[in-house]
Image 1 (tube, rainbow, N blue to C red):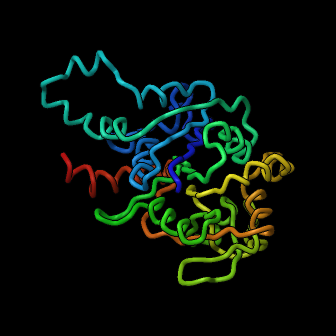
Image 2 (image 1 turned 60 degrees about the horizontal axis):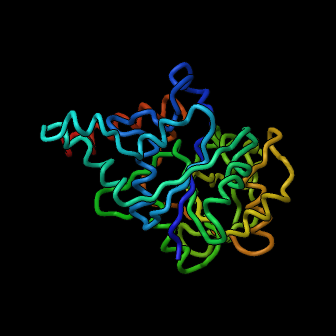
Length: 278
């Protein structure tokens, strides 16, 4: 029913300069794995094996990461160091990878539209690698939770979480009619509102499932906040003409687009994941 996932990875990562001057922010390692690999593992766990990247200049390392490195493989073959490649080998075995270029930064909506040639005319997931989402061992990842909801409602779904008032202006924010605990039918969405203008404290984070009609809606969506084509604006149009659900996911989210969140994620993964695996 849903088998594809899109990764918009063309951004500059300016909050991590100078580290990201020549290195994609999505390749920043949280302990021993780059951010983008955590996201790909999450979408594979949800059954979304066809992975598309919307890339930009200077992002070749992302494609290389999901490809064989023959010299490295030959150098460590038969040694104890091979265990460190187990996770990426598993990802490469299960996933199918393709990419396209976003030639200029015109907003998340434009990045999604650039992925149309990869996603085609079918529903698809979207992962923003800046948001590292983790669940306890044995529990469904965030995308897997959303796929189950999609099978029930067959409409676009956004992941949300409650945020403090002083953080609201960093997010798209929803208002909606409560369907059940943690699930809302969206009635309003505002991109990065001032706290006094926000319709709620329920903020959209970087996990989506989108139906393919979103592409035509984005094409007719005028630039919004900061002169960019906002996915939030397109989703509001979709909500008014049909249905968009907002899901308060189960799990932990780290804002790895900020230095503080990246450090928190690194400490958490080292203490709770890495130290138990190696």
